[in-house]
Image 1 (cartoon, rainbow, N blue to C red):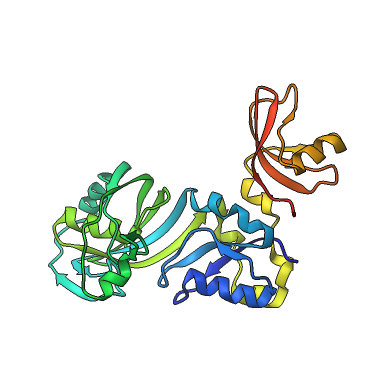
Image 2: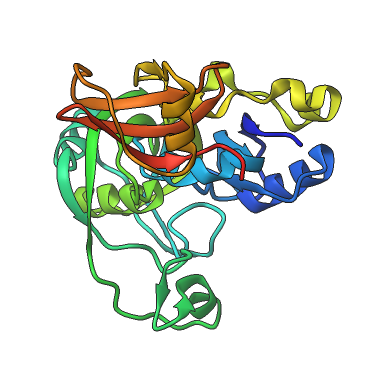
Length: 288
């Protein structure tokens, strides 16, 4: 059975779940999940986890993400991007330096109110289901972090592109909307491309057509998600058996930290934490 991670360059017009459904058919594996939703209009890096690797999805979802986004000033829409209905238009008098100054106000830890057109649930109902019925409900601001925010290009009098590195839960659509509010003319997102998530970048991404042609050969090992952590290979069958039974093991002299733990044959078994000479599993990835 296929196990591993494939980095898809998601095409425009597809939902992240559309991509997973397509890959279930190609790879003939029911256990398929993605590491971080992209809106249908967005393109770019979508890590898809197959088989046993689906246990690692949570680690990708919680990671930093990088985007290149298109900001259109002078327009406000109900979805905060150009796929939605235009609610307002305004003349744009902001200069490039005004836009750069506005971006600077969003760096660091900030509060962001999630858009109505999102999958967040309030009282058991998804916001976008309520929005489609014409309803709007109060949303609590959420804490997010913008690590980097760089203006790349002024495309026209109203259109700009910028690069953003941000935390989990950041809505780039909302960031565009809020930048427009600061500038007093409104703003919306007109393009979005994710260039990095969970350490995976565009140059590692493949198309759905590539997977159709090459199949399992394009799957990366599950532990590639944890490449920043060193490998620790177990030295005895006894230790490996204890790990496979879910028990901590003693590893005297092992520096404190997080490790990719491998069995004697090199199989990736688990992500583990070493502390005071004891190795404890964070998440297991071996078969039952």
